[in-house]
Length: 91
Image (cartoon, rainbow, N blue to C red):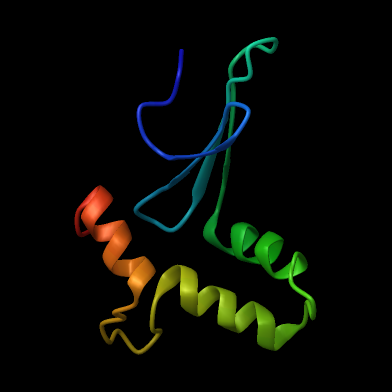
């Protein structure tokens, strides 16, 4: 079984964003049985924050903004948002 959607990172690793902001990771390398794990939005943002040069509260806030959009509910229009909408459609 292979994922139908998502970003193929490398060697059978697929990442798919859920409508609630969570991220599902599908692992399907040739020599391993299909596996899947789903992380909620806060866990995903924390992991991304930890991979930055300065993993602090400000970095976490910025990662959340990029991942979830403007907390004030205003539209966020960026190249990555437009690309995501072109690939997956608007939420």
